[in-house]
Length: 100
Image 1 (tube, rainbow, N blue to C red):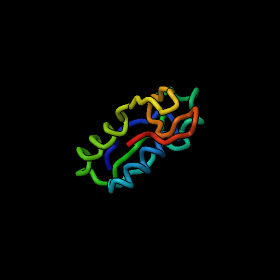
Image 2 (image 1 turned 45 degrees about the vertical axis):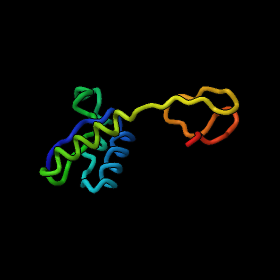
Image 3 (image 1 turned 30 degrees about the vertical axis):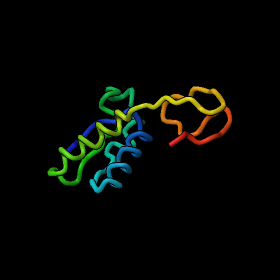
Image 4 (image 1 turned 120 degrees about the vertical axis):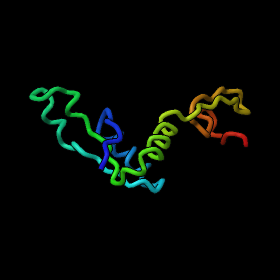
């Protein structure tokens, strides 16, 4: 097993592990409950960690996680005239889908 990264919280660690698993990379969350010890232990030592089951998948896992962390953001103008930014595929003002 190999530690891939630390996550800022349990929710993000679980999301990363689920995304890695769906990409065919076996991973797990470690230090799941250690957050309760923060204060008794240094906070940076209590963060949840994402671990790989197979060390030989490290390069693929790191590349996948980098892609997940740096998704390009889009900006488009809806037919109603509203500018929609970020990863939204539907206009928040009128509900129209993003044009193809």
